[in-house]
Every structure is written in C-alpha cells, then in structure tokens.
Length: 356
Image 1 (cartoon, rainbow, N blue to C red):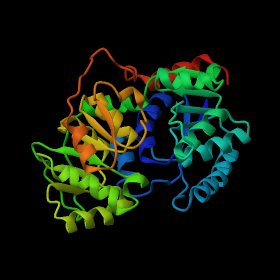
Image 2: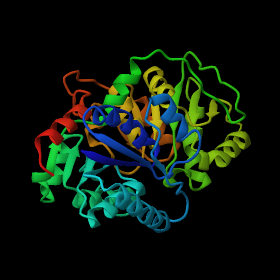
Image 3: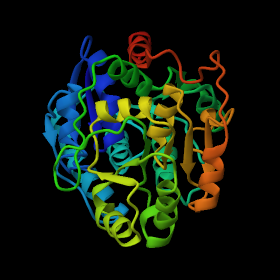
C-alpha cells in the first residue's frame, strides 16, 4: 500500500522511528512533518539520531491557538493527500497534527489508521483528550497500546476496529537502550555538561505546571532539596522562567539543560535515582526501565503504570512531591502491560490481514 504518515511532535518522532522501519519493509510510506515541534532540539535531532527517513513534506506549521494551528494543518494536509492519493493515512498519539490529519483524510474517504488509540483521561478540559476521541471515531483501524485502552474503545462501540498491539514507544526504548551511550547533554549556553555519578532526572512542560511561577517554583524547590543533583531538560518555551526561578531562588542543586535527544533521555532514565515528570512518554519509559516516577498531574495518563508505587500522582507542591519520592516501589517482573516490544511488526501483521 501507499501510506501517508503524519507526525509533528517529539513523541510522534519516537514512535515513527519504530513504525517507519517496519512499514517500509512492505509498503510505500510518504512521511509528512507538520512542523508542530520545529525547534532543532525538539525535531531535527530526533530525525538524525533515530534514523527516521527525511520527511517528504515539511509544512512548517507551528504556533497560534489550537484552532489556528489545527485549521492551517487541515488545509495543508488536504492538499498533500489530494496530490498523493494514498491507500491509507497513519497517525500517532493525540496532537493537533494527529487530529488535523485524521479529519483531512476521513473527509476524502481515505482510511485512517490510529496508533496509540483508546487512551482516555475522562476530561474534555484536556485538549489532547479531545484530539484522541475525535481521531479514534474517524479511524478505520485502531491500534491500542494496552488492553485497558482497547476496553475503552469497545465501550465506545469501536471494538470491531480495535487491535491490541502493545506500545510502539516500547519498541524504540528497547532498541536505543541496547546501544552504547555517548552523552551529549548541553546547558543553555551550549556547553556540554558532565553527567553526575548520581542524579535525578526531570522534565516539566505542561501549561498547568509551567504557565505561572508558583507551581514550577514548588517543583524546583522539591528537587533542589534532594540528596543528589537534578538534571532538568527544559522545554524551549519554559526556558526563561526556569532560569529565572533557579537563579533568583539560589537553586544550585538543579542542572538546567536544553532538551535532550532520545538516546540521552533513555540512558538518563535508566541511570536516574528517580524521575519527576509531567510527560506521558517519560512516565512510560521510567516504567520500562524499572525506575520510580512521580507524575505531576491531577490524573494518570497511563494507569497501567500506577502499581506498586512505580508511578505516583503528585500535586505541584513541594511537600507532596517529596512525600511521593520517599515511597518505595515494588516491581512484579511478570506484569508487562505494554506488550513485548514488537508493536510495529504487529501493526504490519494486521495490515496484511485486513481489507481497508
């Protein structure tokens, strides 16, 4: 088949690294990058280090409100699809790029394949939740990462379209974990940073936690009080606030860095004492690595990780974060909710068996 794959944000690049490798063994893939994440450290570095094929189209669409971004993407993607006339469109996850691509395709009667379908938070106040639900209901085939996600799809009447394949991010994690690590972690000034022998690893980018000073200050104060430095990989839009709060608050136990590449992130995850994040992807990667995680959000993104204190929800409050970090985790080696690391191959198996 001829399949157009649309990506736009860092988590989708990680998924596409595994997905494109498998798809291109049997199909012709046209890769479209919307430009939603366009910063060098959020985009190009992933294509280079993960061996993702260069995009056939780079739409350069970023910024603006959700409606403005999604609308511009919808117009541009319709033009691509009209020109390419693919047999199917494949999308990952829950970004504005995902929704715009699904809407453009379904209105042209092009079958939509949604990888990482069925995840639900239970609140429409989260913009990604809206994207997920609408994309799932536009899709011809739904590839769920877990049985819980598949069950939610069945509850919405989508069971006949649903296939449980495992989490495709686990495919990429296992691949990069096995490779040698040559750290290339850089501070805001561009200078390479030496990784301490013992450290905590943190990312924090959601609007709820970084849109004003107070929640981020509380998170940073908690991390600064720990018994080892914290490596904080800072999202570009949060750079000024993070630098000002650390500098003004004398928070010398926090190492601020530019966003890190995927290999660096995997190995930081594996070697960290513990992890604090509001990233759904990093929450999963901590689980894969057996490293305890504290997730700064009001609801779980991956409920499968919330067992044995392996991943705990915390408020953006110093006392709550420290209390959760002090808990001990318990790991059941037989509990593997995210599959066996062969999700991409299983997606191709399904495509071989069905008629779109």
